[in-house]
Structures are given as structure tokens and as C-alpha cells.
Length: 295
Length: 190
Image 1 (cartoon, chains in turn brown, cyan):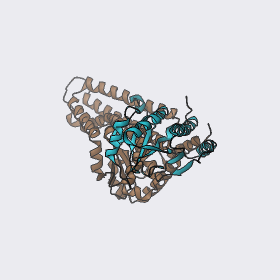
Image 2 (cartoon, helix red, strand yellow; image 1 turned 90 degrees about the vertical axis):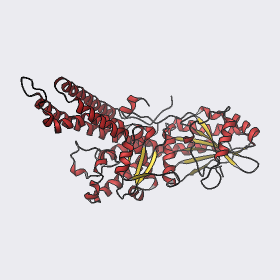
Image 3 (cartoon, one colour; image 1 turned 180 degrees about the vertical axis):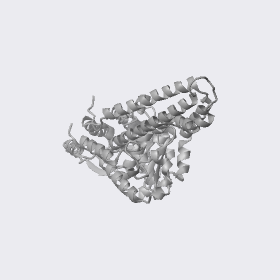
Image 4 (spheres, rainbow over the protein chains, first blue to last red; image 1 turned 45 degrees about the vertical axis):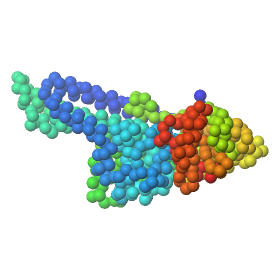
């Protein structure tokens, strides 16, 4: 067996597994309560259907929201060349490549599966980063594709969507079943609120873990964790200087971005979709040390 | 990668498949007979250099090792995508020696834990009209494909497909045409 210096992070995997299990438990408990006490079935089916559509059409939705265009190898030879090399190195199918004409320096990957994925960069990020840093960002996005993060995050967020749906509309539909005893719809409504809050925290935690995983695999793919770190510092420094008004336009896309478009001061670290930049830089520094060690 | 691995984000770097490279000399014989392409004696390994001291010292070890045989010196160059090419030269009629040299590079990288950094190997061929053809070996797929550059960023797809048919019995050919990576400016292919 050949030696390998490409090590996973057991702790990260364990934390992610725990969060996933908690989400499933929450889902089952919530589903059981709904089935036992209410007639919200139709609404739930609609919500799940919407989430499915959001996942299935995620590439088109994201590209439209960002006004991004798919580019051919003739239109963007350097970008395509870079992606070509990276997917050959990672042995994965080549995603489509898109460019969004905005000065917002960012990148995202979307699409329902690795075969239907799109990697998108903005003109702003291409202007600010050098080739090596841009490659680091692309490898981070390709890692999201390989990890099927769009699918995982959609599934994870469905329960939150359902609970949110009931929390918002439950009071209108409530009272459909008049039993004796306490008003069932009120209990369900309260339970939904709680479930919504818990699932929100869990999905955000899952999102942060997956960002760290994407950083890690991206850094190992290019062998240049420091280039990715430098891209991170450059972009987050630039992001903080951009007036908030521009960034709000991209707010709905936040979870898929390379770095969040809103200033991190607005979020407590429990609620944010991305880990703190210090945490990401720490991890990359550790990988850099690992790569430099003799084995 | 399994479903559980992707759920838990445990994606490992893909390992390189080194052994199929030794099928090259047989394909070269076929190429000469059926298409008139002869080896140029130039071959190169393309890999992604990692940052840090471990990789740099291993890299100079490889060069020292390969230069010890007294033949033409091994050249190292970096392309515009940040990938490193290690170019080996041997007499055109001794293709198996060239393949052995390329394999030495592979095994050294793998022994040092950098196997996943290997991208491809290319061996150069030329015909009587001075047309260039490269046989490219993809480490991650364990498969070959022909690459025929014609001038600036253009490739002769017809020739590539013709060659594919001729050598498909000798070496495993990459079936997915989308993975026939264009390696512009690869050493030995101009």
C-alpha cells in the first residue's frame, strides 16, 4: 500500500454525521406528529414538491438569479483550460462553466448532480485573483459538486421548509379537526415553531461543515492550500469594503457562494452558512504543514 | 465515491493507476505499421506540484535519479496552468527505456504520498510529413487517448479518431471523448 498524505478529518466527519442523524430524527418525530394529529398532508406534499423542483432546477434558478451565462471553451479558453485540468486530476465529469457579469467577487457551484453541474465565477473574482488563486476557488467549487452539496443541503432544508410552512400558515388552516381536549392545531403550530428553529440551526451547522470539507478537498486537489487561503483573504477583505446595498441583491444565493455576500458581523457564528474566515484559514494552514512534512 | 462518503464529505483524492503505461511500446509498433507514426524519443510526465519542502526535495531527487544514467538530462518546466512537466529523452528506437523512466517518476511520486498529484503522461510520435501526435496516458482513468495538435490551440480530431481505431486492441482507450484533455504546449509535441 502506497503511503498517502491526503488525510480526512475524522472529527469533521463525525460532527457532520451527528448533525445529519439529528436532522433525520427531527424529521421522523415531526412527521409522526403530523400524521397522528393533523390534515396538513396536502400542504406538506406541496412543500416537498417545491423543494424537489428547487433542487432539480437548481442550475437554471441560480444562473438566472445571478444573470450568469454558460460560456464555451472558445469564449473563455483560460477558464475552461483550468477546469479541464482540475476535473482530469479529480477524475470527475466536467461541469458546465458560467460567468456572471458583476463586480461582486464570488463563485458558486450548483446543479442537481455531478453530471448536471454548473460552476460559475463572476467577472469581479476573475479581475481580483491571480491564476493560482482562481484555481483554488474553482477546486473548492468542484469539491462541492463532487460532494453533491446541492442535493444534501436541499434534503436537509426540506424539514425546515415544512415546519416553516406550518408555522406561517398553520393558524389559518387550524381547527379543521374538532376533537375534545386541547386544540390540536395550536400544539402542532407550536411544535412547528420549535422544529423550525432547531432545523434552522442544524442545517446551518451542516452547511458550515461542508464548506470546510470543500476547502480541504480543494486544497488537496491543487496541492496549494496557501493559494486558496490567499484567495479567501483577498475576497473577504474586498467583500467587506463593498457597500451592503449591492450585496443584498445576491442574498438569496448566499449559501452557495464561495464566501458569504453579507458581512459576517450581521450573523452570529451559529446562524451563518459559512465558517468564520479564521477557522477556514487555520484548516488550510494545517493542510499546508501536512503537505510539507516528510513521510 | 459511495453515497455515504458523499453524505459525510469523505471524498478521497483519486489514486493513480500506474501499470497500464507499460502497454505503450506495443501500441507504438501498431502505430508505425498502420499509420506511419514513429516515436520521437521524447516523453513527459505532467503532475501538480504541491507546496512545501517535501515535494521540492522529492522533485530534485527524481531528477538526480534519472540523470544518473548518463543520458540526456531530464528537463523540468511549468506550464501556464501551474502544472509541472518532467521531460525525458531516450533514443527513438528504445521506447521501453523511455516508458521505464516515466514509470520511475510515477513510482517516486506515489512512494512519497503524492500519487494523486499525477495528471498524465505523454509520449511523442511523428510521421513522414512531420505531423505530431501524442499518446496521452490518463493516470486517474488508466486509459490512453491520441492528441494531435496542429498549430495554435487547434487539434486534428479526424486523425485522433482514426488513431483511436487503430490502437484500440493494444491499449485501453478512453471511451469518454469529453475527457480527451487538450494539453496545449506539452513538451515534445510541436
